[in-house]
Amino acid sequence: MSYDFNKITDRKNTNAIKYDLAVARGKPADVLSLWVADMDFPTSPAILEALQARVQHGIFGYSVPGEDFYESVKKWQKEEHDFEITRHWVVTTPGVVFAIACAIKAFTLEGEAVIIQTPVYYPFKNMILANKRKLVTSSLFEKDGKWQIDFEDFERKIVENDVKLFILCSPHNPVGRVWTREELTRLSEICLRHNVLVFADEIHNDFVFEGHKHTVFSTISKEAAWNSVISTSASKTFNLAGLQFSVNFIQNPALKKKFHDERDKTGYDEPSLMGFTATQAAYEKGKEWLLELKKHLASNLDFVRTFVKEKLPKARLIEPEGTYLLWLDFSGYGYSDSELDDIIVNKAKVWLDRGTMFGLEGEGYQRINIATPRALLQEALERISKALQ
Ligand SMILES: Cc1ncc(COP(=O)(O)O)c(C=O)c1O
View 1 (cartoon, rainbow, N blue to C red):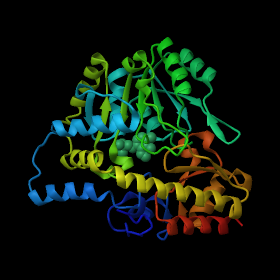
View 2: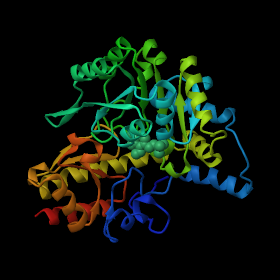
View 3: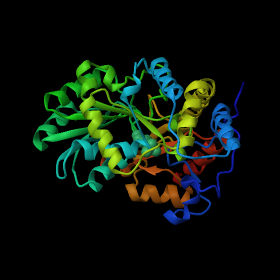
View 4: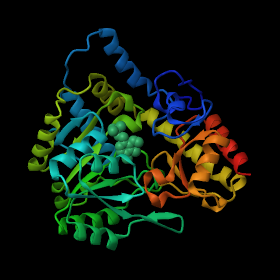
């Protein structure tokens, strides 16, 4: 079966934050949106069928996932990530950011320090600050077109601030790194040395470009497994973010209890019926669609690479190893960060995510979402190229 990822589906007036919040967020009404990390394609037909069957049934009462749901998660993790899970490790949450907030509250006290590696997905910082914890950042740095970890800085910051929790982004949004087993091992060893728990946000785990492999943090060692929460979701992979459902794997029973208790305190109980129905269908029957989607993303990436070379000669594409979010360095054009943003938003009329939203290290960068039909991607790049001339 083939799927048409170049068909344009109008998302305006569908309550999509990517499209319908433009004016409310100060963007021109006719802006082209390639910012937030969801996709402009309908999800896999197998998922739609499973959801339609529930709609047909017509009753949406309190529901819990069955044994077949856990089997589907188990099979997906094993086949895609070589990660053997048991049902008892699974805790569901209505999203990964919700799980981050739970972990912060479960494993740290107010005023205690939590470390992140900036530039990084901005809700990490927001959740730390909103929960009145101390924000500690260790900057990633770019060398020869590749963003890397400063391990000495990471360890020093942990010691200096008596850090209790590390929120890891793996694969990394926005710098596109798929951390290697060696890098993750070094991070894990530092965290174990200083009693720092690890929350691994692995929501982008299914998007890894050829030549790279995602390593589930807890597969590094028994100690890493005991010292971590792994959080993921079918929501990025299959474009289901609005269904508000994610899964966490916690092997250490003491950590699991703390996390579970914190989750329960929020009043969340049974998960979203449509969320787990879609997730199960995705993991049981979504593979073929995903393989086709990945071909489309790889082809969009090729397109951007060529476009940048030919029509945005002063910009630099950071070659992504994973995710469908590209990190583009526009500093060669010589504009200040706010001038650049103003040109892209108001002159080019394209809505991307400004690099500094992810941390000051993102100055001069913009993040572009390529999970869209080619025509929209091309139009956005043409507009940017023209505006920068
Ligand atoms: C790294 C990362 N974590 C979490 C999320 C959002 O997860 P959720 O919608 O499940 O809260 C995103 C969305 O872009 C993301 O990039």
